[in-house]
Length: 245
Image (cartoon, rainbow, N blue to C red; front, side, top):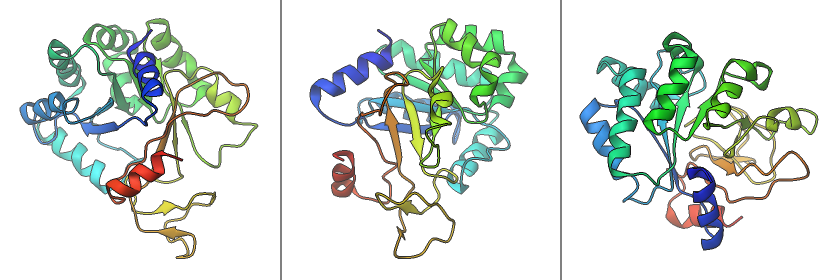
């Protein structure tokens, strides 16, 4: 089994949700970022998402935008990000690590070389937010052929017609989040499907956007799996209750 499959199997046996952490590679500098990355498993991270810095992170909010700016100002690039993964793997061969970002840096690097170097470095999966399933042949298919999971994004507005297309070719887990940029400080109440930057107080409350992760079990039927919220604004008690849902 892959590291992601192994980790989710362990979590299922333990009957608990995964703590999936995100950091931007190279923020605020290479050495500090590497130290943070290496410290995450001991701090409780079950899965790590490592952001690939990019000049135009259009799906992210101010916090991650600023992290990208700081990393780029510190001369972080995709080559250094892959080297960071290699350094991480010298001490940790168990924690799944997923690269998250946009297609432009990968395209510039060269897709075949990127996939080969990512596999060699110890990358377990990719979340590339601007690569829809209609373009599977450009990155998803060759990545999976090399043994790297390709993680798809869905939202509450992904209907039953679109969902099978999204799940087809998805592996590792499915990233499920409400509509809008990451780290926007509004959270949709359970059962509410609408999203808005200025929602009515009766439907939304200030909080960090929550996210869910569903291990991919095929395209038939509904998918049941542990979830994880981006819980910076929720506090430990409320985050724990949310994860039990």
